[in-house]
Image 1 (spheres, one colour):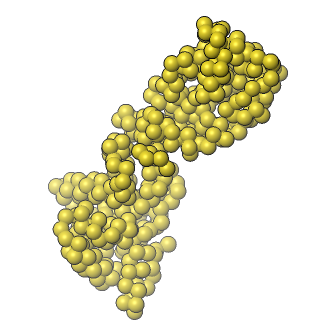
Image 2: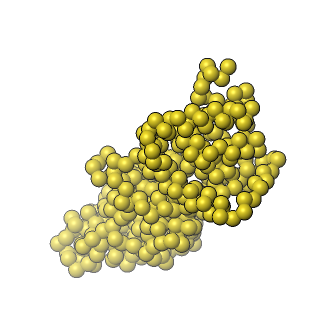
Image 3: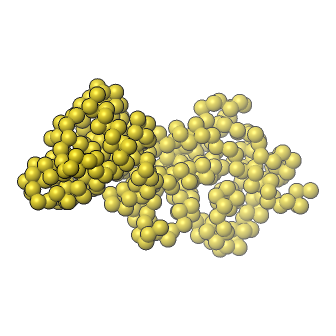
Length: 204
Length: 167
């Protein structure tokens, strides 16, 4: 009888089901052991926020990327894999502190972030601008021109715009506080709606 | 996809975690399977940056799992063989879920090579050419070992042809 279907029964027999909970438990163990072995080059998680789902990623040195959903999180992770290391795992524990501070920020209980940052995704002038952006205080705004002056290069208005547009750590590094010189909103990596939402949050 | 593009390791885990666990379970039984799974993925994570872009990831993972399982089997054989007590009911811990003691006994009693060939071909879905590469030996030998394994399994596990997959 079984000769009619020589293989199906064996395949079915050996392919016992694997429960999701088992795989989740094994994944947590892998996160832990990878961290201990120094193999977790990039850990990430996603969190919900008033400006949509955010991807948070950190190296051993600190928070390296905050990404809006419109950036396509899968695509962002592929870029991290290419630019930093493919040793990337979902590892919410590494992002606990960042997630908590973001929650506090959105609850208006926090005005400045106190996190280790890894700025290795940007270089040169862009990184310089991004290092200075936290000097624009909560609820304040500056123009691209003023930021150019702030970093000691008043003619580099356009380059400041590029530095803001390529900020790998939006919200935490507050590029949303930089507006066009004519007072208009200017672009934003998270979209103008998110920029307005953050400015309104801080103005309230 | 751009050239030189390597996907995040998380994608590898997401795609292959279940298959590797099934492989480890059939090779080692439910008790040692999770240790072997963990060692497999930790080793894979370590070696991943050097894996060629063109590599067959599933065959690569099964090869690592095979080596880890051999280590476990060898270690176990240096010790007096414990009688593997299997719980009658799934414990809910996930360790023994869906276990059918008769099935595991029949699988455990197969010669190592037959058990390995069966699992790499039927569970991991690797062609006999890949299986032969993992185990050494010829493709024909792998095919014969599989046929013998199926015969033995059907003989020793009466549920095989009547019950299908245990629930």
